[in-house]
Image (cartoon, rainbow, N blue to C red):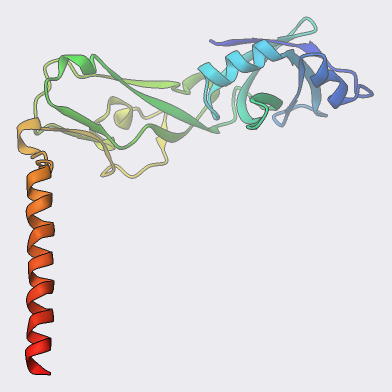
Length: 214
């Protein structure tokens, strides 16, 4: 399981000062915790988490000699400064189901000579912490044009320990024969000139016709 290395955070610490020092504040709440736990991580650790994990995935947080299984609930970022501002985690309890997200990962896409069009990248799920699925890996080796995979076709759809929150008929990806897609031929300069000349001729004829009428 992905491990987040953190430290306890003093409740009196000013978060703006922490950020200036390269520290990102965070918290762990919910589950059977009597109160919210205040934590902090380095900016590098926060950036690594945001880069490698998505909202709704399970992680193990190590801090102050403790270990806490949790879900990533929020990664607050300052888009202008390109920095992580705050991290929020939901504490997990072994016998309580939680809502999470399973990422869809397509493998060996380069082995497919046609066009792979993926339309679904994650599936919301509900399960006990021990049964949470972080990634749904689909090997594309040997798949050909005409293949269409929906949620109901995935192995996880037959897992009795995981409740899918997405309808079974939703498309995950399909493979399109690249020869069936016609590329539009760019209009040549000669064609553009011919069109302009035709418009000019038509305008001149209309002008002559108007003069004759007068």
